[in-house]
Image (cartoon, rainbow, N blue to C red):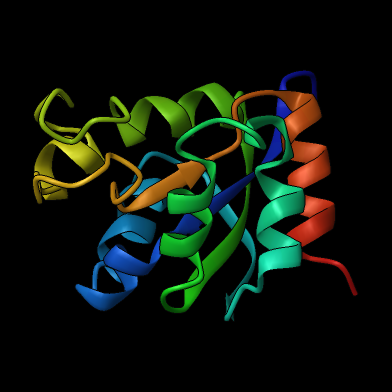
Length: 140
């Protein structure tokens, strides 16, 4: 069936620490997407540097990698029709303060007065990113 996609979703350390993994997954499944695989990962710098390679050298790169190393991350392989755009829409704007009500970040995100990387969730932004990111996080 055309339009079927797989995407990577990460519940970031702040979402795991706040026990929001179930709520986040529930919202994704309620929208009709399927959980294909899930695992809890203690990411290391090598994995995170590969994941965020396009941001290397930018001022937020090190703080982002340090934050993502700060605790466990729940990695999910999600599938469905137009899953990449659909899941990103569910996430809401990157900045939780600007995220619309009804989105994951809009309803559950908090403004900690810190960098916006503490925004609960990551979702792949394209077919290319999804393929690359899924291979990193679900390497056998």
